[in-house]
Image: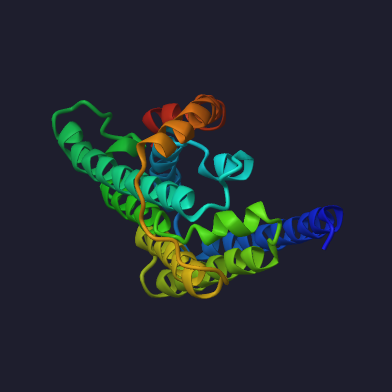
Length: 250
């Protein structure tokens, strides 16, 4: 298929997938607001902000570097990217656990306002579970990158929607039985797990093994440092308000 046709088809899939994803999210929000107390969403928003900060602060643009590099289809090159992605996921998980363990300690010593969201007893658990979902997400197959590079995105869109739907079903079912922050956190974990599994079994292509090469790492780092700067600034623009409001609001 010609490049122009592939690009047009990929754009159509992306647009349609975005609309479908927003409809799923909108419908689930309408239902979840009937099942959960408002404070649950505040706690989850702050936990997601912590993990989002760690994600953006460690972003080296693996998708972008694979798309732009002439070695973007090379198995060894992609193996290094996958290795770095899993190391990144493990780092986010460990730091998330450390922060979740430190929040109760900080609250007990009076470093956090007793009526702020940071001192909420459910925040450490929510943060730990969301950090776990980041670790699980990092194990997704690198075939997601290769298919996006080839503009073969139809199956990727369906995979995203399927994993999102699985998470939503689990979230709603859990909230109906036990309304609380665990419902939102478990739904996030199920969505990440579903996407990781489907990326390995539902996307055609050869399995990419774990690889390490210092020269490839330096190439990725040389490109990724600009993505890192952009992502860090993007976090400050998009989410710094949540960090501040979490300390100011109950």
